[in-house]
Image (cartoon, rainbow, N blue to C red; front, top):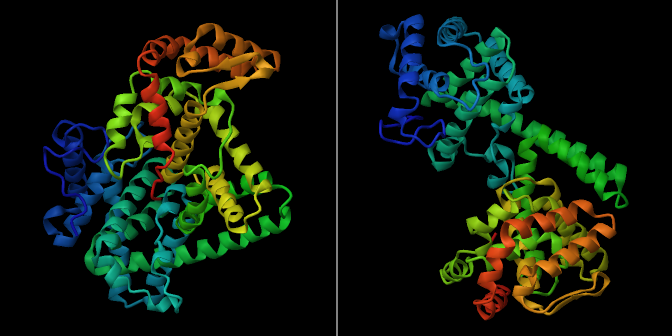
Length: 451
């Protein structure tokens, strides 16, 4: 299996965005040459050369910061020693020593943070029968096997860069890398990872049960905080729960998307998003909305406001609080369970799907404000009758002043900041596209994404 099939004009595997020839090619070729000189490239088998070339890639690819990757000569020396020791074990037919290598590799897979991500998604193959029915050869020869190998090699590179190693530990890791790269020995690496995967899932499940017994239903915050530590320790458990929860959260997502559950969050937590839609984005949203299968919550400009603009800091706690209250008020057992899983997903499972869910909820809340005008905030003495009123400096300052009077200085500052940066531009657009904005908000209510 050729792990790195990189041509000169391909994008560089280091992720810089530049072409390989203008980024890491010279570094990689130099690393391969230096490792080969230590080992003696000319006397190597084809499999040995493939391992050297792979290790050269790991050593030669640059990182955002240099970390502490061993130099090529050191890697070459350790790799040579690892090969010699393994060859000696095989010549003596010392199966116990070879099993010992596998056990030492399993220890590294559990101890080194970046190696904890090298696991097998066994839940994808759960047939309800004995684990022995798991077909390793079929998995390794398919798409899943290729992805497993490339992701594992990248994790090894990051581990060599950033995890702390003794020389003996590097030797064990390079032995495992050799097993992984060569087709005939990949099963040895895979079996080590498979065993460690099962151990992680059993241990994480036991620790999670203890957490739920400790807190019960009374302290959900305590549960979420401790579950985060489990996810950090056992990333594979987080992946399994994520896959398991996706179907479970769909009833809640559908209910929210179709308006059966109306999310109410404060205006300050979505004001920047409202400005983003009003400020020239209506045409873009309409265009994307017309293309089947693309949900507007994924549009980059709105994502920039939520993430880079900092509105997530204000939106996230408000939407989490609302979902928590919705769980308490709901009388539908299935929907209550689904909302609970959605809350766990948002607060604990920090991945791309969680981000998609946040953007969906953010979009939904923005559309609610635009659709349900006029909006009266009697406690603040403010009423927004049309989209352009959100861009009225006097009304916005009055709203910010009210927040300040309630001891919400950060929220008031956020309102003033987004108005200064986006309010005036939004006002001009709102005066000419008021009807289109409201129509768009109502149209988006019925759009339900597939998770």
